[in-house]
View 1 (cartoon, rainbow, N blue to C red):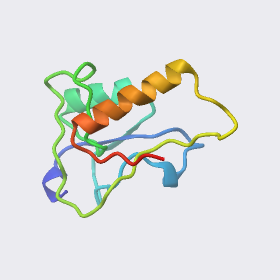
View 2: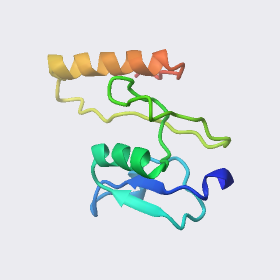
View 3: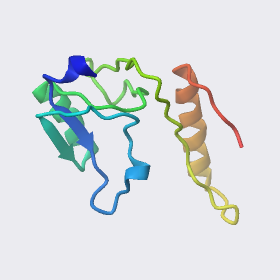
View 4: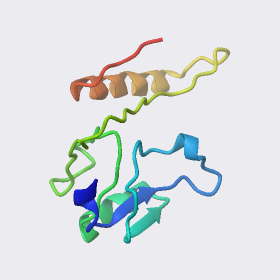
Length: 118
């Protein structure tokens, strides 16, 4: 993380109602003199490119959305991130939602990450 200090840290914020416990970043820089908070995912990508900045995320990128100017680099840390979703046992997923989850699992698996099933 020390190597990143000269660069702007751009953080996605879910708004004032968002919770620290649901943050998308597994680790934060100790201090960044150039920290920018955004509430729009398209903006974060534009800022990363335009300001030569960085963010901390899962590292699972979508080549269809991100161009060659965005790359993921693994951090040297012992921290881990568990990504998941919450379901309601009394509600059945729509066909579209199930298709989305199936595709999401394929993307996660294709990046070499472990899937934990129910």
